[in-house]
Figure (cartoon, rainbow, N blue to C red):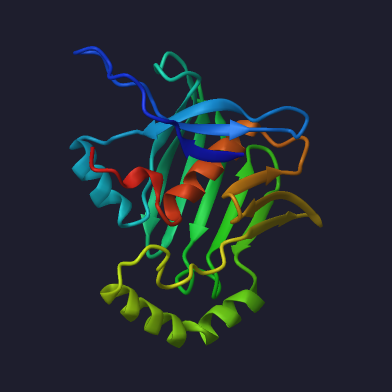
Length: 223
């Protein structure tokens, strides 16, 4: 599964909401990827400014639609709590049924040196994953002084290809009962669902949520 923004379309008629452009794609490897959901932010009272203010504490909220014109909800993600670097989210189905929960514990603020993600499908076991491998984090930290130098150079050199500081490790492998039900690979920002019984709606909500915390987060737009 992956999240991306579809290309430009014709402008919507006056008074008609613009179609949803951010989509979730899925492929089982036997056929080309297909769109399984359309995603947009669920704005609180106060609109976009209130959403952007709340997200600074770790809060996120969005809707997965069955089509670009918002005719049917697939799932809804909301924040149950977000404080002290720990945020808890719930995913509900179209009829309000609980699909599952996510807990994000920020690095150095939760229970470890790496960001910890706990995924629980309703009625199922907890799956725990950590952002990046310890080895690659050690390498990244050792190279940090050199990266800072590159960043300083980038501030004065805007030539194409100058990308500044390298991103930290982002791969996440979830484990539950000796199995690996989920895996997020930073190459292509793709979430792989390995457990046959895993609800695809939970996977779709998870990959959207991960992208809301990653580089170039999709939900930071001001309009």
